[in-house]
Length: 451
Image (cartoon, rainbow, N blue to C red; front, top):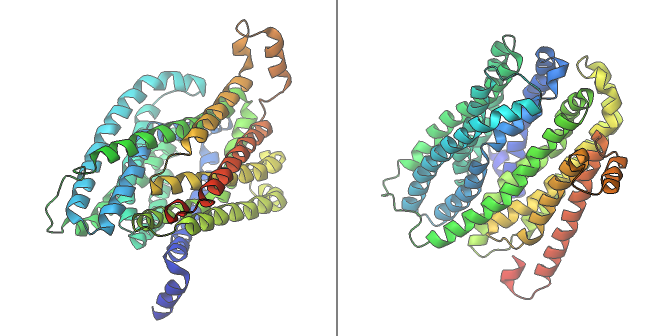
């Protein structure tokens, strides 16, 4: 234990907790890899395999308001915890849990009306999927309320243990349910993991909620700032969530089934490139928010996070490029998609590049700054519009000049590789804007501008 304490002191909170959480998540990923690369392809027929990612994105999309709530929640929990304001902290936890339930009821009702058209577009029979998608989406949306509370309280050890245990819970449920009804069993497994995290997190939070301090309405004195912060985060994440929803929908709806199935398989490997970034930004957010509240410099945490995210992503992409073919030949479920190995490496690069850019967004959220919305929102809307319009150009027959419609068709954008290149192109634009904004900010003279 003394050795670990010395190592913790040498590395600092950021890298120490990042490494702990990264190790725990990777243990869970071994189980998730078994689920995604063998269990799901074994029971889900090829003609339905391409529908798995759109189903996941839909269940995530219906919980989008919760993603907004989580950002706001985490920042205010950090603020009250750093001030030892236990009364407002308790009030915030109770209120945000209540808001989470209310928002999920509203999201669920809207999802019920949207489902019929959604199922038609991704070419699946509804069956029992509707209820399970709602369960997975809503439980997956509520569970971050509890994990974000632990994040804001810097309970990284508890979060590490939760992540170690949630993947086995998901696996056991899928092993039982998948043989009966493939897609329904998959969504049931998706709902099991967040349900477990909610229960386990609540147990950890009890010691903080048992503090004798009387709850004080957290918005008193900060109500105007709270609603401004909430509305701007809602706007930013709304555009981002729509873009994340569009990508798998375009692939499933506009590409042949073999390519949409290939996208599912290669994305299971390509997401390896985002693993470091997801861990680093989770640890970065409360540390940046706390440092910003204290008037300390925070840019070093952003640089470390972005370099770690992108550096790990490059290594992952190169590894997939050189070894992907060998791995695909070894796995019977992957062998039919060996021809897409280059696309897999390219997708890994695109995902890590986009994740590194999103690190900046989380950094600005942690500091309560929103000037980046002036350029990030138009770029996000342009990316979604480009993918929708140029892959579905025939919609414009009779609306736009036929020569322009024919030109869009001549681009042959509706291919998996071109869609991936589109992600890279728009990430490059974001990266340039981030560099310009940071350069402009840190060329100023005041300490506040340099933070």
